[in-house]
Amino acid sequence: MNQKIFSTLFFILSLLSLPTQAGTYTLKEALERIQDRNLELPIEDYKIEQSETDISRIKAEFNPKLEASLGAGPINKATGDSLNSSEDKNQWGALYIGSIEFTWPLYCWGRKEDYLKAANKGISVKQEDKFLKELEIAYNIKKTYFGALYATTLLDFIKGARDDIEKVLENKKMAEKDRFRLEILKEQINAREAEIKKNLDLALHAFRLYTGSVDETLKPKDEWLEITERELKDFSYYLKIAQENKPEFQKLKLGIDAKHLLAKAEYKANYPVIAFLTKYDFAYTNMRNAQKSTFAYDPYNGTNAVVGFGFKWSFDFGVTNAKAAKINAEALELEAQRRYADEGIPTLIKKAWLEIEEADKNLNAQKKASKLGKQWLTKLMSSASLGIIESKELVDAYQARLLTLKDYYEAIYKHHMAWAELTLAVGKEIDPTL
Image (tube, rainbow, N blue to C red):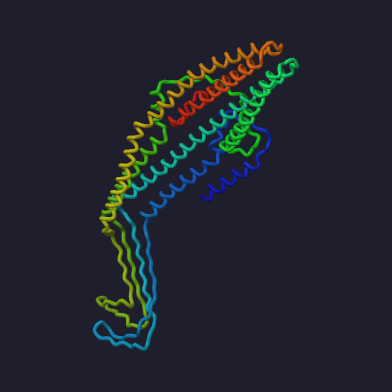
């Protein structure tokens, strides 16, 4: 535990000592930082460490045990032997008694092994939890990375559009109503720009958080949101990967095995433990005559030692069986969840797979629409500079261009995120670009 704490403190200090100069990361580089930099994963490491303590506890329970007791109390004076005695109530002294018992379990019907196997399964469950957290963090990094690129790309277009409008407004011969329309459009663009800047700022802050960076100037290395071609394989390919890697599948399997092992170990608690036993008792007081005969029982002076092999048996069948039955019921619950996962998780993977197909088709359609919007605007801009068209036509063309371009880049963003969704659903990075 102390080593983990020192490692975390060293990590935080190393972060604080980083230079604050501008830095950039590609998406792949940002994802590689998760293990070393993200601040959520140490929490999962502590959970794993807590589970590992079960191993030590189980071993300690089946190790040799030594129990000792020592006490003292008042006793009055008495003289005599086992046949005749006399007491003196006016004279008192101390009686010292003690007991030492040593038990070494030799055979426990495999209970220790069952508990250890169950504990190791529990550790593996926590490790799968950590892997699931890594997948969630990776998804969030992709979301913030592509979100920042989406906002940056829109801001660049908005700046160009505003410059174009201001250039058209330089025409002194423009009618007043045309000038009003263009001024209104420019203010609408300014309002949209403020919203996008806010989204960009949030995306960058989240990106730095998930990558574990204290560099307030850190940003994605890519400048614009661009299309990345990827090959989508058959659905069965991704389903097979999920069945072998998805943390939810692995957790349920490990959890069921652990519960069955625990139940079996609890049932075995009904059996007697074969052990090496040693017991030593002693008593002493100067208030009673010590009995020298071997056959005389003397609880006040003397020692008694026993060494041998025997059984240690706890007769609590009802409690033990109830514990085992409860654990078995928990195993049945997990088995029911697994049956549901066997049916439900493939549906989620299918949904993510179909969304990539949909994102591909949507991207192609939005790309064509964006080209048409650009052609329309380019044609009108050449006429607008000469003042031979009404501003309404130019405003309509700009609004169409803004809408089609926004939808086009949104389609690119959704295309990237559809692959991120499939990775999250499958439980393993399947993006061929990463």
